[in-house]
Image 1 (cartoon, protein in one colour):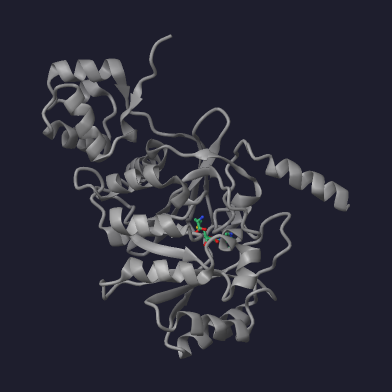
Image 2 (image 1 turned 90 degrees about the vertical axis):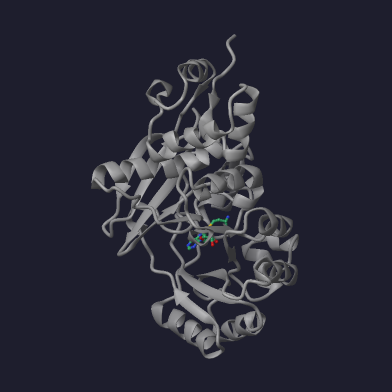
Length: 367
Ligand code: SAH
């Protein structure tokens, strides 16, 4: 059996340097390779004209540059674009591009499925299969960049911001996510500033601390409740890392950076977490932290009974936070008609946890 080819998309600068050293090559080759892949969009080694003929030949024997394969492509009425990507014969993931005047945000997935099982989220519902590799993560950016540029004939990338808010919990796939984000940040590839990359987490506390030390991009935290009793129910991970511990880690994350704040995401669920008393509780919780609150109108998920709070309730909730001095915005729902909005991404994955099977059985018994 032949050895499988290395996929160079799995390599950030540091590991590319290691590979070059192993091949007896000079270190500047690492940057040249990143430029060919991400800036020139060349994935045939023969076309990498500033590499020696010998290196091109050797890379051709041991390596390849392979992005995910597009198997679905939908555009919503508001211009939001969703790609369904095949990552192996069992798993398909989703990537979403959200165009706005003056900016374009790419929402990137980090896992096939999700193990956290938040009660309101479609991705968690379907179970978990595996972590995505660094190449499968950066491959989403590489692919969207190439497709959008080609379509728009744009010289610079239509992607100005990346949010790690697609399928999965990025901090449970720490190494591959950080590796992919390092490629986004690298001047030899996308050269993004770390403020334009936002990682969203349900609150994996030790990994928040590690992220702060190793790759301090902008951080968003899925809070959704002003107290542990309710949060235990909505985000089961809270039983392991309760709110007080989570907020401490968040404060440390931005300590010493006067202009930085953590974004707290709060999905508005009718009759569950949207009462004025809960807004006041949230205000008191966040009043002394560098915080910005993003209220997300709940996006319905088939088979889940939660409903979206009505606009007047959301406005009242927001006004209580604003009056308490907490920067608050209501996130505009984008792409809901193609199930591309927050919490609606499912792809098509093989659930090794068998959660969906258990849920179906459970449903059958209940009926
Ligand atoms: N696992 C990470 C990344 C997902 S980000 C995290 O939890 O932060 C997706 C965001 O959308 C999270 O804040 C998530 O809680 C929220 N969300 C999930 N389902 C939703 C839904 N149906 N409607 C609105 N927001 C939802």
